[in-house]
Image 1 (cartoon, rainbow, N blue to C red):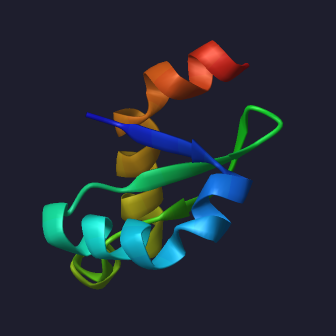
Image 2: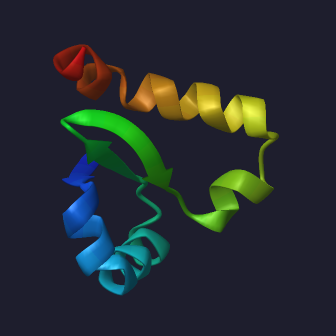
Length: 70
């Protein structure tokens, strides 16, 4: 399931968030003013795929989140 959090929450809990992403392999979308502005993704997601494919897969996985925020 897609996980999102506000930028202040991510800043205050970065170590915990990074550990959770590493442990579960699930990316976290960071929101600023309720709009996606960044993502924390597992390194394997970047290493195993070229950046364009990773971005396309990420957008597909989070399409419902982006639609709600648009």
